[in-house]
Every structure is written in C-alpha cells, then in structure tokens.
Amino acid sequence: MPDITLNHAQSVVSQGRAAAEKAGMKAVFAVLDKGTNLVAFSRMDGAWLASNELAIAKARTSVMFQAPTEALNAPLQIGQPVPHFDHIHHGGLLLMGGGIPLFDSEGALIGGLGVSGGSPEQDAALARSAVEQQS
Image (cartoon, rainbow, N blue to C red):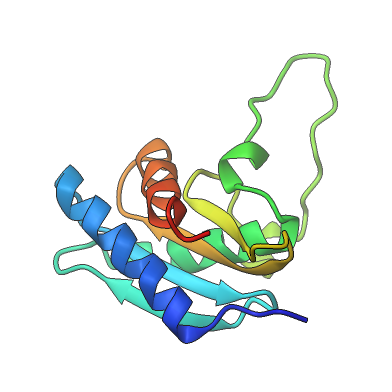
C-alpha cells in the first residue's frame, strides 16, 4: 500500500508555511501517514501552543474519514438527524476546517495534513494551499 514519504510531507509543510507567511499568519502543520502516524510537524515561531494538538487532530480526522474536515462540520438543522460521533474526544478527532486528506497520483490515500493557527476557514485555506501543487 502506498504511503507518504518524508520528502513529500516536508514539501507539503514548506508550501503551507509559505502560504501562512504570505497571509501574515503563524500556524502549525502536521502531516500523518495513512495509519495516522506523525511524519512531519512544524510550528511557526509565535504560533499558539494549543495549535499543536489541534493540527494533529485535524490531520487524523481527515485520514479517518478520507475527507476535508471542513466538509464534516455541517451545521445543525432543526428536524434533521445529527451525525453521532461519541468517540471524537477519545479518538482525537476534530470536525472543523484545517484537515485535508492526501492522495497519491492514482487516488490512493497516503496520509493527511492538519493546520491550526487561525479560524477554521483560514486553516482550511492554508491546508488547500499546502497541497495545491503537490500532485
């Protein structure tokens, strides 16, 4: 089964950091392999310490669901069923923008990226920027 390489993970982090600097943000980037093991991690100077755990949780969530975390954070709608995730706290999952799954050129899951440092929308935009030219 394919997996993300250290070089690929570091390239994703580097591109994400460049996007964060351009946006004037201080963020944390975590890249996990498809088994949710940490491959690369980077905390920009001045980024919030809490963002360390949040970035890892977002990356883990994107791998576990093979979807961007922002897509999993649907607003509640009166009269509609609510997805039940009673294992979120114990499993280290986080359903807010900033996590994105990583796929190889053939569409196979190889890992996930988690970004934390701004609003969920800002984190999601940084994550997308980090992987735009990685294919």
